[in-house]
Image (cartoon, rainbow, N blue to C red):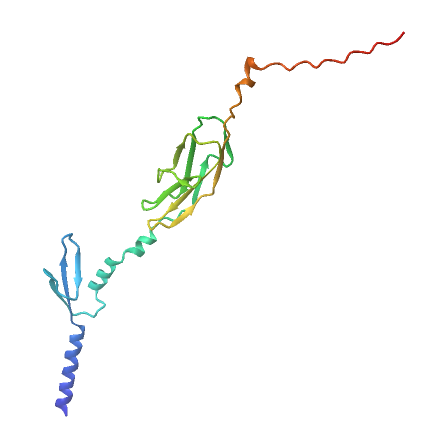
Length: 197
């Protein structure tokens, strides 16, 4: 009976060691990145671990695979985005007027984000700039708006819409100007009626 108990105890010890013993294969690819796997790979080096599955090596490998939460925490959170020039409802009367559009934001633009400005809903060609110079803007009312997009393409913030007006002088008929303009004809006065004496 004692032999059976001793044999059973030895069997339990061997199986518990077999469960905690793990083999890991380590290798580097052509880019110099280190990989770990449970299965052998060509050129891999065998690493035997006697620790439970929550050892430091597998945790380090997991930490290198998922850096996205830390990166997400460092993304910029914007508190201000506005177009401060031109002022809302500004009017321009010169035909060759240059409209200077100035944008400000806080904090500064993150390197992974994009700043886009729109004129009448159409994207201006320059990205990530705080100043645009518009020329040859046609007569009428026009709108400006800016937006910030993250690296995933989602919109983070949008400015208020600004409206400005191009009120170019109207071209009139040249016959109504200068020496060609005739003075109005005098209106004849009625003649007095003669009084009898």
